[in-house]
Image (cartoon, rainbow, N blue to C red; front, top):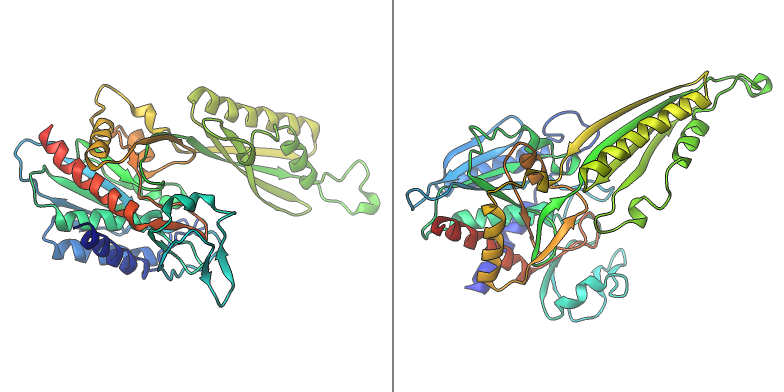
Length: 409
């Protein structure tokens, strides 16, 4: 059964990877790209073919459906996964391949001489002897999150035992601020007792704690002047931005932090002689620390405005997502069931504070506690992303066990 399941999952994964569905952070539409509609249409038709009920695809490329339960009174459970893949400047077209890892460096693309070097990626070493899915090195693999889509769709095809209603949602634009999950109607489209996301992370990883996330945009308006007569007149917005950044701790950045340490990350700037627009990401697990980082940005903006009285500084801060654990209450069934499912399928749990966010962050903020468990993949957002097939199978087994265990509860 395991070999058959591995083939079933992998075939479906390859089929979904053939549909390019990158999101576009510069777009203001939902979905941000037309290709996500193509992915949504494919899933909606497959759901109809599988006989699911209440299959709905909307103009935002969000797909929802219900597999009716076989046990009266069982909790109504949900799975949510995203259909977009991330744009990190690589090809939007994914060409997957399955290779057996022998412990040696792997050539992903002979024509372009792209290699996965074991010394540079020791995270692959536990998978010696396993079949692993890679891209050809010109793109991400897209296991984030089409591996999860494959798990959920295969689950819907195979689930025949005693279970309650299973509601599924496939949403767009997770990679650019959880836009699809934020727009999901929990009253009519995803009305469940509890839910899970499947996204990210190696075998066994469980997430019910993640960053609180916000974005900041700081606009510096200078005073342009010809340099021959600029003394006492010219105000350089690039230097305003430089002085702004210099007031923050260089050690409190992504490249110097780990675990539960938060950061402010200045990650984009567009500038000319008149105006500079600086962008930053704000991340912290603790709400108090999160608010303190926002306050620091406000105070530094005021200080730079005072330093350059003839210039101008404008700051906007927007919350993006919140820590899943902010929604923790007395009902911990969604979390407890993950640990029960892991025990049942023989996987050691690895609880991590995720230094990012999931669609579950958006749903938890709405009051629906939505923890996350692994797809089994590594190196997300990289040309060296890879998915060991045995871990892929275990992700499926956990999802299946959750449905049966929830019905017994």
